[in-house]
Every structure is written in structure tokens, then in C-alpha cells.
Image (cartoon, rainbow over all chains, first blue to last red; front, side, top):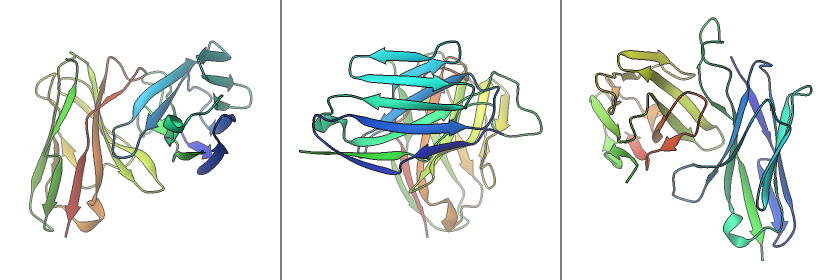
Length: 119
Length: 112
């Protein structure tokens, strides 16, 4: 099945600086790559996603880039603010029904990055 | 209001006592899944369902059961809970398997 590695596990940046979180995936058939933000004590919520037919997507201060050849994708947050402090999860998903021999036919998440914005 | 609900939100139980965590969504989503979240391990999929009466194992299905008799409900059943199932559990639904997942508020389970 799919395996998603996420780095770093903890990232501390000064308010106003940029933050970058990186993920790699193993299944070249994966074609959907979302990012979720989980604030302390809350449920994960989607902040941005990208499909394999594009290389970059932006939404105000956040952007995601995808390199299909290298099988990695990254989350970029610019002009960080205190409310950006949270745990961020990347995920990857293959097309429906593509997996053989068991394993989840859905999202596989990375282990998360705890982003700390220092005032 | 579009939402996913879970009950109970908190549960403390003893080893071996059967329990069910309910999950319900009002968005007419076909795809539903259960995850467990443990420190340092992220979100791991337990079971998922692509539609009524269609369920399949995720990455960590051992010790869990699910059913999908109605589109809106997807209960998680622990027939004989053990301490290693102490965790934070999230139910989620989406229009399909590769779309935005709407998570429930979570159920914190402690098995002693």
C-alpha cells in the first residue's frame, strides 16, 4: 500500500517568516494530495489540496507544490501568523480500486508536523 | 448545517466490555471512514465504506468491526476492547474516497 513520509516533525519559525513542510509518497499511482490542519483539541480540517494534473496551487498565504517524478509534495505558508500554529498532516490517495493485495483504498496520512509560530 | 457527529465524545471502559461508537453524517456522502490518532503516529485508517453494505479494512483493522446499513451511519464496534485501543478516534465522510474529508469531533477512548 501507500506510504507517506512527512518532515519535519516539529517546525518553529518566527512570526512573519515562511514555513515549509515536505512529504514523500511511495505509490506512483497516487493522484490526490490534501493537506489538513489540526488545531489543539480540534478535528482535522482541509486547508488545501492538489491533484496530479497540476504542479502548484495557491490560496492566499498557503501553497502546495507537487513533483510527480520525485514523488514529493510540499506545503508552503508565507507571512506566518500566530493562528497558523497547529499540527499539519499531508496525505496521498491512489485512484479508486487501484490497490491490490489489501491495504486502504483511500487516504494515507503522514505522521504530522507540529508548527510553532514564535512571536 | 452540514456535519459529522460522533457519540460518545469521551469514554472510559474496562478490558473486554463491548462498546460501540456511533457516527452519523447529514451530507449524503457515499464514503465514510474511521481513523485512530495516536501521538507520533498521525491518523491511521481503521475501516472505510464506499457505500451502503460495502466496507473494507484500512491499515489497522485488528480488534474493530464496522457496519454500514444506512448511508448516513457508520458505527465502530469494539467487541473486546484492550488497553492498546486507548486512542482518539475520528469518523470522517466525503463525497468519494479522494475528496475533502469532513471529520467528526472525535471520541477519546480509554481502556483500562
